[in-house]
Length: 124
Image 1 (cartoon, rainbow, N blue to C red):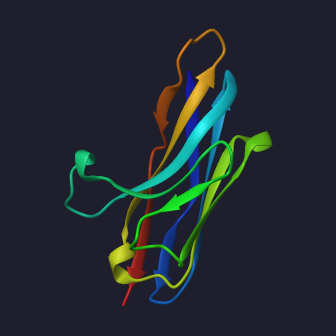
Image 2 (cartoon, rainbow, N blue to C red; image 1 turned 30 degrees about the horizontal axis):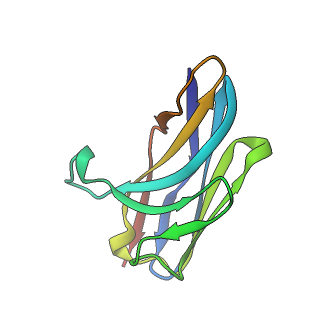
């Protein structure tokens, strides 16, 4: 089993900045894509929106709504992914979840794991 623990988030004003991080632990051999999703208030789990992702080769991809404001990065030696959020807007308010595609010892295929979620609130 693998556990993902998120940290960061909280309250920011419009135009402010926040940072999120997520670290995986367990029987990890390697991690493929690392991602951040968000679930806006009132939305269901299947309505989570992809915010940003980064491949094992370090190639990032961003949702159009955050491009130029958010930066995703990864540290493979720490099994972690971070999201730097700048120029925050009220519509960025949501619970943010990290997701990782993890290759584990003795498991033939990559498994998907989610963090517990961390709340981001941006006041206007």
